[in-house]
Length: 180
Length: 180
DNA sequence: TGCTGCATGTAAACAGTTACATGATTAG
DNA sequence: CTAATCATGTAACTGTTTACATGCAGCA
Image 1 (cartoon, rainbow over the protein chains, first blue to last red):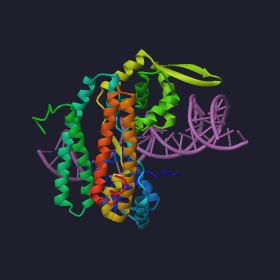
Image 2: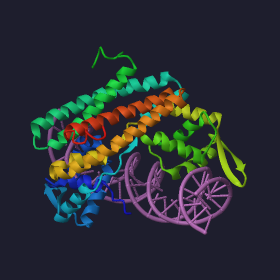
Image 3: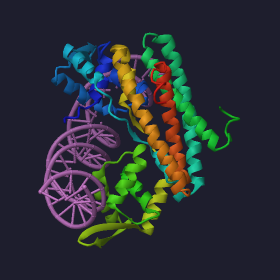
Image 4: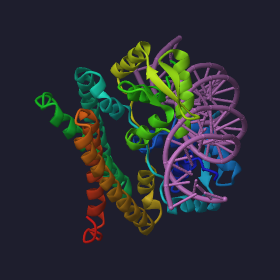
């Protein structure tokens, strides 16, 4: 029926522990959930407004000098809504992997072109792996309570490692000497 | 700038070898690309109309009795458009994995609830693995020319195996006795 | 007769992104 | 002084899905 906007629950999730401003929520999303659940910046403020209207969060302005900051706090109704969402079976993943789409159609084109995409992808993934490892360190040192943040990250890392090794297998370790 | 509808290239991709009707394209999508690039049924016919208007495909009606079937053939311009798309760097993947989102927020709820989602997920993935293996057999026997269809499938299978083993690791092989 | 599969399509609603617009504060 | 960052928001557009609507053919 009414397919609820999932952005709502991402925001509620971050508000469970802390009262936060839209901007702060945006920063947290960028550093964490964006890696497996993308949200655009612009979706946050309208969604916060919606959540306010529904009574799932309450807003209060905080002033630092002339600077206004709208700080949001989750309500009991908001907690209930979050838990109700949480216990529902997750929807099947939605994928839109253009890289795989091109791999799929490589028989009709040239392997050289695809090889170039693979090279690029491999470089990207290695960079991402470094980033993930930094986040891993950070989580272990700074947020030892967030065991599931770490678990989620490790799932992501495992997938990265797999993709890296698949790409290297296929193309014979040409790049392995430099930056593995 | 103008972010082109990717659906166009999925359709062009399938038309590179064969002339096909909208329905047949839909069937092929369901069986193959839908596993990593989801398209809804309803997007096919309007996109074919668009492609016709752009001169990338040509349509001719075929009648079997009173039954009309619109068969589409790719044009030279269509081939060029496809190759132009193919050589562009793939856009970064878009993920929306509600399962991981829930895993991420498990610290704020209960592990029991999440465990239930994991059980369900594990069952789904095992089913999907069977499906993938059938497709693998089919491809090897029926479409030996499509080496990249097979490669794409093997990437998918590797990810499935990884997810299955991650889920089993976490939850101690409770289900390993029955249907592994 | 009614069900399933083949076959094509449209309208309305919704979600999501891009681009824009504004302004305060802080560090160099 | 100016660039970067903090901070909030809107309008327009585009893409996508949902639900609907139609009708033929074959089979039980």
